[in-house]
Amino acid sequence: MIDLHTHTLFSDGVLLPTELARRAQVLGYRALAFTDHIDFSNIDFVLPRLIAVCKSLAGEMEITLLPGVELTHVPPTLIGDCVAKARSLGAAIIVVHGETLVEPVAPGTNRAAIAAGVDILSHPGLITAEEVELAAQKGVFLEITTRRGHSLANGHVARLARQAGAQLLLNNDAHAPGDLVTLSMAEKIALGAGLDGSEWLQMRHNAQSLVERKNAGR
Image 1 (cartoon, rainbow, N blue to C red):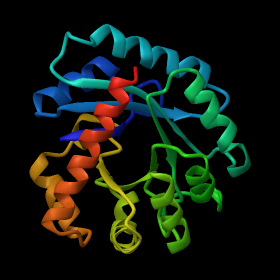
Image 2: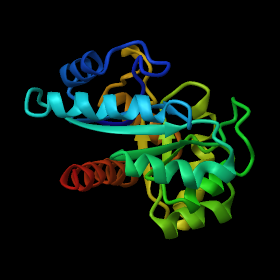
Image 3: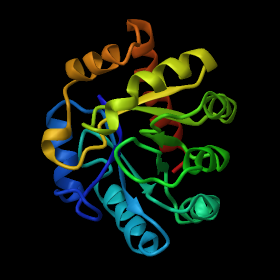
Image 4: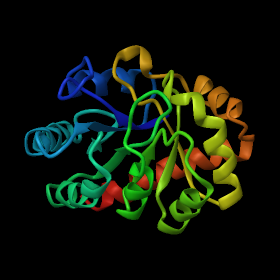
């Protein structure tokens, strides 16, 4: 398993980064990205600390750790500037909190995130076919999520991604230890979204390729 969308107590998660990494490692996870919620108020505080802990644990644990952020409820017109700031501060993985069905995310967030070239658009809800096509063109990964509530639109996202040739990832959006699902459960969730076995394997390959590319660039 690889999870490139997780939260620690630097936002609304319940664990220190080190404990989250340890628990994931024990469950057999090969890589993890810490992507705590940020906007312009806290990015200067959160991201340097996630970078520091990833550096301190490198070589100490049998799991690849990447520092990142999840832009959350940032107005669409400001997403591009926030993405640029995150990259300048050293974020390896940039996630944008998409237009999930269960939160009042501003309309236009999905399009703005894709246009900004983020790495992952998380739980994008009822994303449009045009936006999915743009994601395919820009190389932005769309998320199939295991998280309750956010997962309600998984089937819609999977169907449009297949039609447009957009790339998918499966993430937990983990906030607590119980959110780290097993590989077997992750596969069931992918199949439940309407994907087939080869598409599930492709999602796993997508995650590994992204980890390798981002880790090499650090």
